[in-house]
Image (cartoon, rainbow, N blue to C red; front, top):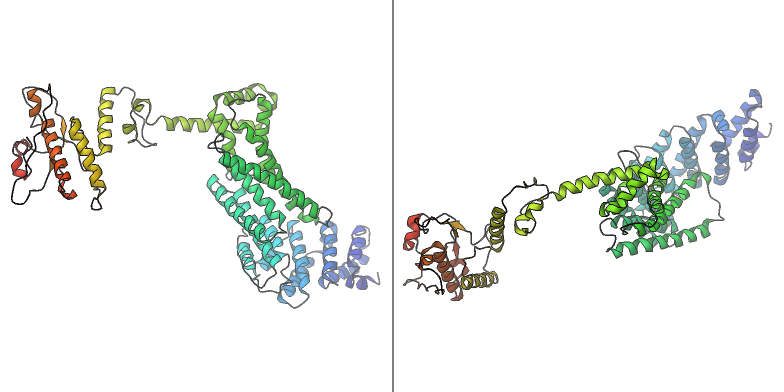
Length: 568
């Protein structure tokens, strides 16, 4: 009792606190009070940094002692940390003081003094005072809400050139861990993928620049494996690159984990930092699980469905061991689930096996993950069916017409006239080619040759519409025949200087009726032939113009009024 003050002021402070904790319930109040006062004085003015760390281990592991010491412990530690960061006392006392504040806050104390202290760090404090503080800042951000401002502190420490390289590396690692945690709490797959990509970039760079950061290498391998597994959703049978990435990442993680265990296995580990090691073990378990399950993704059926389904469902359990997602923030599940669901969407046999397992196998009838898997597959089947209904079977074999329909268009009726669809298909095909066929093989060949020549010219400029647009000309159709009007195209050439352009005569076709030469098709053929002639004679590309208006009967009978050469 008489030597309590002396013990508290020296390296025996941890032993004094241990003895006090053992008898705190039996020591009379009048004897306990001076002992508690001496212990508080020793925590306020510790003998050294390691003595303070050992003393705080005793306080934080004995809740009854911490309760008897009261709020003065938090107050004294905050003052000690502030003085150490300001350079008013030993800088090495900052880390154990902040660690003690963090442990007491996590145990149920108020975090306000801790967060206020960490927020005020600028990176210009003494380097020894900032040693190992980034990991404490990262843990504080993981545990307490509304602490995104601590990321600014980590960024300041990472970009402070005067700090020790190890301290800056710790800040980089914690920033990568923050990106990883954001991905685990993401509300959708896109956000989760983007955040994991950022974390992977940080971990990879840290591993490249610091050979001793095996933890960064392990996290990089784990994230790479998860991203590769997510890529297997689209094409598990043909995407060998994703499979190879997954295999290589799993091997890299196994090797790194073995090296990490060899380096740290016999070293002293802080018990209150064991959560980080457990997280790395959870990542290793997940990667091992998805690497084993990838073999089932490309199989049309399973020889042992129960074992295969159980291996796939283990992925959900392994992902939750890393982070338990909220209902509105699936996080890692949103990234992994589509690859697990894809085999059941591609194979009706696997979907039937899943349905039978839910209906008859006691191992899966009450399995929540199996039921959620089936519900997700069922929803995606319905969505896929709605998308495949557009444009529907009515347009099968009619690619030009089907290309005009968007994926979110309304489905077509089933009672459409196939002849009308064929006619629309021909018109759509003509629209895609840029001109309407005349029916004359030689003229159409010349026209296609002309278009190819014009497109090679640097003066050729595509207009908003097609150059050759079909127009309906009813004036050239004999009223006595009662035939249906046919689409024709009018091509005009600019007037030549000093003389009229000669109009070549269309070649006669054997066996063709005389009346057909008076129709609009023959007129259109001659006009197109004239355009081809002028194009080969060196006429400017601008000389071929498109008539976008419907010609009147009078205009059709008097080609001279428009300045164009006579067509027939």
